[in-house]
Length: 181
Ligand SMILES: C[S@@+](CC[C@H](N)C(=O)[O-])C[C@H]1O[C@@H](n2cnc3c(N)ncnc32)[C@H](O)[C@@H]1O
Image (cartoon, rainbow, N blue to C red; front, side):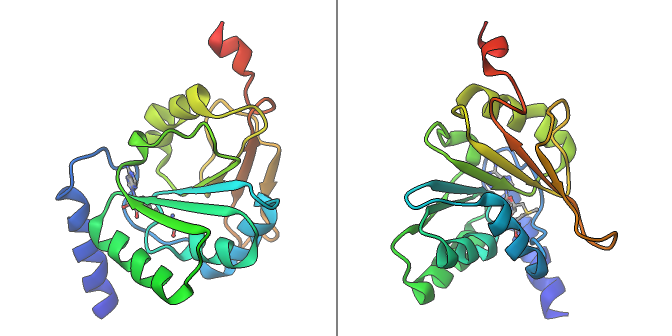
């Protein structure tokens, strides 16, 4: 009951903020957090972005277990406040949250991108942003849905009951030179 109410409030709050929503709030499953961290394979000082970070679950998990700089971007102001409260308890100086549209963020410094978006929105806007801004070698992790037209370097699905996680690398998933030409 309370959880349903929270989902409705958070869902409605997205419409109160101007910006293109690429997905409603549905959190990544807790049991998949370790898989995401393993796939990200973060080195010290690398920059990890969670685009549409929801309640900050993934960002906090990754920041606590890596030496990377973690940046969560969230459109919904209510979810953003939850992220900030979470970080207040974590007190992790390598973790930052921003309340804005991911489409306003320049991703050219990102080493790893994680997101959980809807396939049509990924295809219509997110993919083009990645192709324009991400540097060669950057890794892109998409929860559940593939990026149409890109070739994944890994599709992680330990058992039939698990959700798929797609992993891409700029330069292998796509050839940037052909796009820039
Ligand atoms: C499917 S949820 C995933 C939440 C979180 N990444 C997780 O895995 O637990 C998608 C999130 O993206 C946010 N979102 C949608 N459009 C956005 C945009 N343009 N910029 C930033 N966040 C956005 C939604 O508010 C929602 O919290």
